[in-house]
Image (cartoon, rainbow, N blue to C red):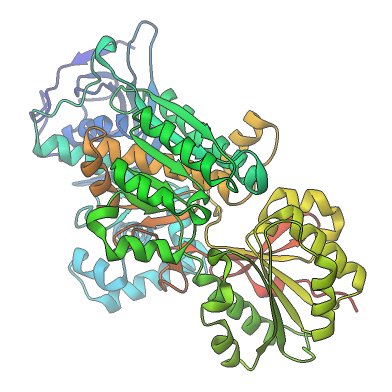
Length: 595
């Protein structure tokens, strides 16, 4: 087989082919570089649109992407991979195309509808793009559910992404859709088509200034385990981006500052060091929840600050003064949704047989921190609406809690359920053990901390039966499985369900924004974050809300393709089993306490 070079210039048609983008060739294989220069390895000259897609793919920092290419009279399965031959100084896109024989028995219109569902559009929005009626789209969605054996739109979306059934060009365009990888391919291709002079080729090695990504982590004190997972997830993302050629040829350098979350002076000093290093952005977990001055420092610095402090008060701060806090992004929904998740759990219990509550009361134990005040989020009123009430509310310190006294209070109140909003796994492990030894017959529902591997490691089999919820958790997908495998290979342990993947998503969010912005200028980077909807390991990221924090499913949005699911799980035989929301789990999986 002889490879024949085919010259191509951005914005101009390739020789021997219709520059309108219609298919001029069937199955084949070619390579393309950042400038659109192609080498045909097999088959005929590729359509210009596929060449533009190949250039867009090279900006994605993904090892590969697959999709269905729709052209007049022809469908193609398209696979794009990064490729670098011996002696090459930069990656090329290796593009393989094959004619679609049967896409799971779906029609072209069903592929279009499936694509629009997968990127988060409602039936009405999809109908507008397809020039039909919402009722028609609704019927097609029902048919898709039956054909593909799914229970929900979320299932359809996950299957479409994981099975590479998304179609390009995107029906109706790419505005206001979730940023899955193929949408990024088309967005960058559109940039090249509308701006022919935009080369997007990497600068010469001597002129490439690295992008500095700062991470503010706590590797000691009460947040040590979370800090380590956050650091590892961030490092994996940086490694993946650099392995794919960086951002426009610029490598990302990871600048890490460690501090104890419980030592404000150390936190302030660490942030000052990142500022002095002139990092292009800062990522962190929930250090700012306990050290709110970090938001003021971020505002003064004026570069993207992505955090996970799960604190509605801070989202409201951004919402109330966007001119000052335009660079602050909370990359998970707020704690206000925990009360709703708990009430949903109680409502599910009422329908769970043979569960039979004795008093329909709840004991609430909260850490002495504003971000842990779950009962302040209308919990009492919401419980009353389902016939339950709060029998006990106890506030305890972060460390050195007298759990024996707390257990005495709980057993004295005789509740059916205990809701614990305390975020230190070492502490709640003591509580859980003492409740077990006291013979407490009810269920214990932990806010977040029982999701951490350390909780299970400390308790062993005694952890079984504990229920936990988290506003941000890794969802099932091919990319999540790949992440978990890479984490295990890199660090020798399985990641917890929240922090590592959330940190990975933070870096990918920034990488996407930098690539779309064409650089690290803060205003443009933050504008890209606000304008786009992103799909990550932990769900959907949309920062269009004035507080610049994602929506929560099902309480902040009823559409699972537009928000991050607030997962409630139970530890069973050492692993977490998802109970709710319904699109992701089932209360029928709940194990009730024996006796």
